[in-house]
Amino acid sequence: MPKNGYITIFMILALALVVGCGGSAATPNPAEEGKGPVTVASMIDSEGATVGKMMVIALEEDGFEVNDRTEFGTPDILRQALLAGEVDLVLDYTGSGQYYHDVDDTDPWSDAAAGYELTRELDLEANDIVWLHPAPANNTEMIAVRREFAETHGLEDMRDLADYVNEGGTLKLITSASFAENVKGLLGYEQAYGFNLAQDQLIVLSAGNTAEMLKALVEGTNDVNASLVYGTDGALEQMDLVVLDDPESIPPVYLPTPVLRGELHERYPEIETILRPIFESLTLETLQRLNAQVAYEGRDAMATARQYLVDNGFIGE
Image 1 (cartoon, rainbow, N blue to C red):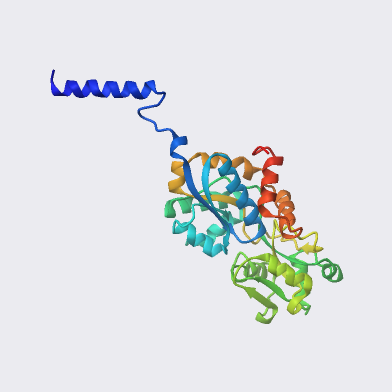
Image 2: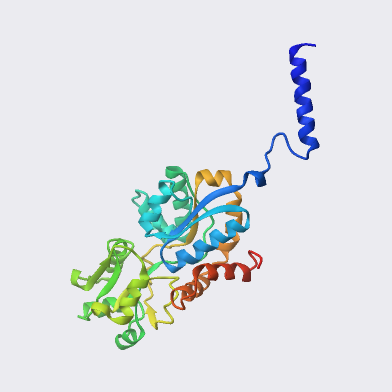
């Protein structure tokens, strides 16, 4: 018998042995290999903690090995860690795409769908990073004042605030550097509504954690009587604050979105399938309620996340 005949018989016998044992010659058993690890990270605010824990729990329930790095750091630190491959899956916001890429026209980010699609396209092409399906909640940047202050001075929207400032009203705004220096933030507000705040009317923080800002507003620290807030901040009602309407829609739309390194998206496409229904359920009102439970009521973020997933049928008890 020719030499290659022995080889053929050997391969047939080997294949028969594998099939007879219930295995497959071509496809390894994923359960034996395991899935992951996947490092999940988020920002240090209550929403980052709660929604980040949801992602951790959902992936673990599906059999993934997960490294929990939720409450990882500030937005810039989280972004750099994702780009460096130090973390794999993060919670980010579509409007931030304007800061991540060199673009001349930032108008698309004022539209929810256009901003998402452009951010997804730019990040995939430049960084092999995939923006998965977003939540239908606009966590945009706005300005809030205490209710008593708003009622005393007749403040309902940004036009009213502009009139108050231009008539010599006393205002001190606490905000983040990214909002204060942005044409889609404070600079855009000033241009659209025709007012200007001097440097001594601003307290500018390097990071955008509004918990610290709202505390200063409620307590009147350093004469603060206005603060940057986000649309999904949970303690607005409990703190008796009024969010001033923005008729001109100046700040961009910020949809909370799971963002995954392309390598893992290709290897584990089921991650998108797992997370999509969860994020579709996270409306503005839902996130405000969950954030209030963690930031205002002091509930544990992991317990809050798990209870939400159980109550809505995403995982078993």
